[in-house]
Length: 421
Image (cartoon, rainbow, N blue to C red; front, side, top):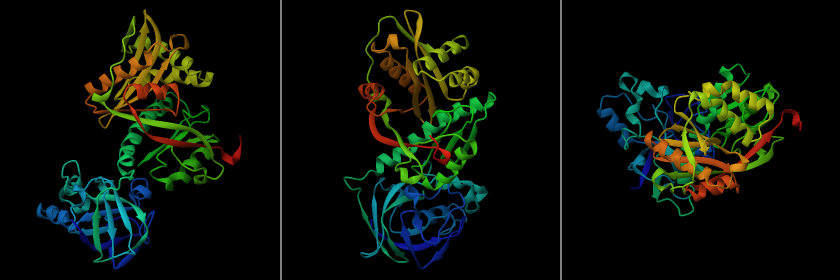
């Protein structure tokens, strides 16, 4: 399925992108190209956008006014059905000195490109509804110059490619941050000064009155490191230490220091193991009368600071009613000794908030909570479950024992304004 480059397209931001004879392709994208929505497009995982003329012509046949470059693709190709290829497929462009790209995922449609579609229906190129007609993103494995009419050699994913894992991480990161956003918004609605950024892949919060990683962290920096300055500005303005999730090397932020390494675990729901029975254990949904007890067990098990524990008491009732959010208590012989939560989003069940009081640990309650939440997620239409844990911890071992395999380790960073400790 080898092809060629039909058109090279760039713009200072926005659409359409305009044809040029040639452009240098770097890790972050094409020289001379930019994006108005940098929190959605661009970055090392979405450096180059591609769309085949075959897809464009099929969309045109449906009456849409789409043209090469009008939906923002950098490379319009011919001879390659791009969105039918597996993630990780390699595209070698040119005859030896050109770039090598690796397909990293589909580019979702958005309102920015609605002018290329009848009635603004940009969903016509969604991979979910039209799998053959989607734009595709690619990472740059080898930099180089791309020219109009360059040949494209298609190769299957390399054995050592991390493309499939990184593509899955994009989904899991989004699910994870949605759960945290729910907590931050509940705290803000309860009167706390929680300053929230949520646009594109960047989600962050800073709370001057709630120090610690729960209310002062930033997600999305693995995907869009270009957003680092905005995340640091949020913490600087609030005067709080920030936790930068999966930000990689401390070189990404001057003055940042490595924090915990956190393992990311995932499993298909049908692969979750059955938890051994625990005599006298009952797991059930939280009722309004249980909310105070849920918070007490959660904050006690995690040894939360008094200010954080009080915050949980104030916003718990709002959080418990967040769409897609479910809380549970584990009763042992009629006494609540464990708690947990699940957030369902994009057909993934997020397993969080799992905590068991010290005197009840080691009896299998955590594994029972994992199994129960997977069952609830399946009933809500989820096909996967995911969770995070400190790498090498007992929690991580429980996840592995229940069938959630570790696929990634986040290197988190901490950053304090002015280098304060």
